[in-house]
Image 1 (cartoon, rainbow over the protein chains, first blue to last red):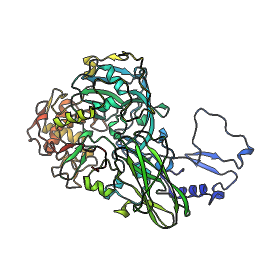
Image 2: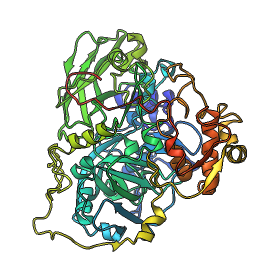
Image 3: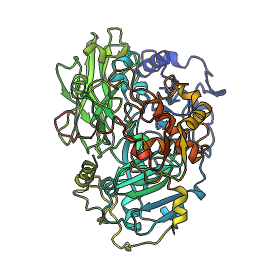
Image 4: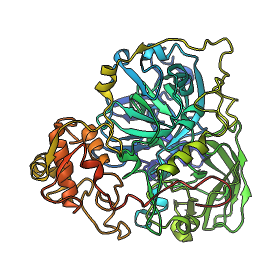
Length: 420
Length: 199
């Protein structure tokens, strides 16, 4: 689980080690050295015979466990994906939470950061971070997904067989967010009758801005300053971001500095020319905030190699912006037959859930895939169903089923193309 | 669309009582397992934060709405805009707004003719969005460098390259919101609502 960018060779070695096939070969010498970013770590031949390391102010990952984000393209407006295939459970380590910035990551001093709330309110107010942290606090676990995630599974010209969960769907992460409910702050400033939208604006060099329906702001929206037990990371909006559970990541404005209550949307660039969905027939869907139910198998997946047939546990993640996942079904024969997978409690609303399905692989070539079902009765569709509903031009909300092809030699590649 | 937007908001408001909010912050989706209830002894108002004066609001209130609300005084011509474009925009958008490497700005063919894709001319529904976006985010490496007059001018030039205003057009707070954008009525509200139907 240590390869940068998912090198198949080291993955193969790791897998072999964990299954015992080549365990003896993993640590070859009495003082095998891991070389990590110019830091050399000596591994004791017998840790029971030498004293260990002393305590330290800041912990480090084990030398062999070095998961990394994967950057998509150079430039200021860019993204990096979470290594989904390297992680377990549901919480994304904060330093591996995906990134999507439109003009880089601003450096902000929280002591001088201010949030201005104005517009159709009785008391236009400026809040400093210390002010916001005095209000009743809340924490909740929810996913954030870029609505542009997963185009390689939808747009034919972007589909490749050598895609990992990270390179395909890495713009998905799941965290415990802490902050003050936006409804608390809106109550404080007094929303005036007739108001129906809130413009949220960031303090980055794009001053990214989105119009949010007031109903969402009053429901479960949060002004978040905490992530997984500490201050939000700079990449995630330090010191303050808008958290909109279940909605597309772009609307969850980072580095938040301004909220303007209004009776209409601003029609910003992000909600008109971007983050809208061209459909067949010449129309385009707008304000498509909610992320529909989706799942992806993260093991086995590219670039893993199954070293032998036999019992393997298929593992993956499922999530929906419409509430709770009620079930996940797995097929190991290219979609002909489906079996309900085990879901790992707790199953939280608008959060990822881990699913597992124990599988006895017979060593023959096959295709495995998963489909999530949420509490509204929505079933994660096939790519053909989404194409039929929308055409092939949409670049957002591509939540169709994902498939992996297992070859007879155990190698795994993205397999959706074989089913189309 | 305006009526539809009000309707969207009304539909979403059902069940949460906005704007007279129920102080219990628990979401309607049974997230209570991870969300504490609002303190029952909380006052109506805490009074934290400081009043924002009109001048303070004006410092940051930069957004421009489709009816022109938020547009500043000033004006610019298409000819002036060409000079701004060739100085500040050409490196990323190309001499004619079509060459890239960043977003293609000019094109009047329907966006369905992939891979021509979406441009200001065939996809942007409101001309005011150009002013709003350029003022907040462009040029990419020097955002905020353009004056109001320069911003009006370059908006006019981009619209002119798309055939949407004449070469002698003057853009200001009155003329910009009046520009008719071809894609104006092609946007529809999200009709996905969960359930078994795939949309």
